[in-house]
Length: 388
Image (cartoon, rainbow, N blue to C red):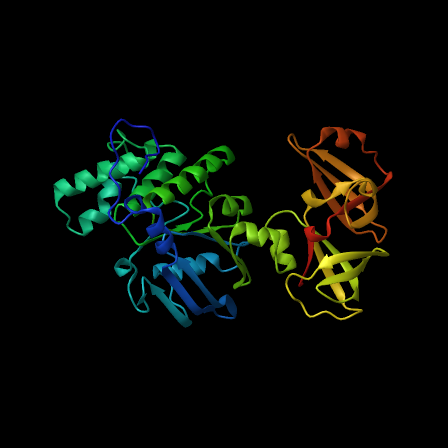
């Protein structure tokens, strides 16, 4: 098991961590279910915070609950932790029903957005707090504290107070305090939200590395789509208390099932049209042009129905008549934005709808003329029909 910082000392793997397993055993472990939510619902008065949610988290997996504020993701996390209780449904952790089990008796620990560190205690005492409550022997506590200080790259800082640390260091203390009790699942409620962008990006990578090293399941709440994609093995996209889609980030990005999921996870063009011919590849009329669009979500289609097409900005090309693409639209450029390593161009269709194109070739960007008609296009497999 590697440390966050280089060291000449040989690190000791956590008891029961993936560092002790061979690859075949690791894959078998990943197929085991550590957390299962079955029909979970939670209501606050007239507000349905969580609505009949069922999902499973595998052992050793990093799962993110992604969605806008108020979608129910933090409520789900608090129900797993035991701070809230579902009105309906069942939660099992490591095969045991935890209904009625107090938070301190569940095999989970939680890291909050504000870290909830004790300012009157040193870093070492913060980390040791849970072990002392368990009446662990003093010499064993000291050994474990040093071990986890090294694990999160804070060697030599055990004697400082948390108020003397940077935001990133405080986050590491919170992680060490949660992990020192060796929970089976770590719950994280937007723990990087208070950090500046540059530090946040660095801590994302360090957090993912730490999760891989210790091998326990992380359930992570965030509203940041880039963060969810960077960290997660699987993502649950939520809105209004519902899990709209659950799966690997790339799968959801490439094959969103709804307009909301497409727009929330990355940039997306959503074109509105009319079905002219149903089938596995439907013919859809948009702005007076017929397009071929795969029906990968197996939606029931009839000629004359309204249709929503999702196509990502990076999948569109300019000068479509010169490209090997099946779908083409004539547009007018309304704006173009240079963004360093890429550019974004906004165009208007004949029905006054807007479409975005993202590219990286500066020569193409420099040669685009504002207000001039231009043909854009995409390969038939780079778009799909979704539900509203």
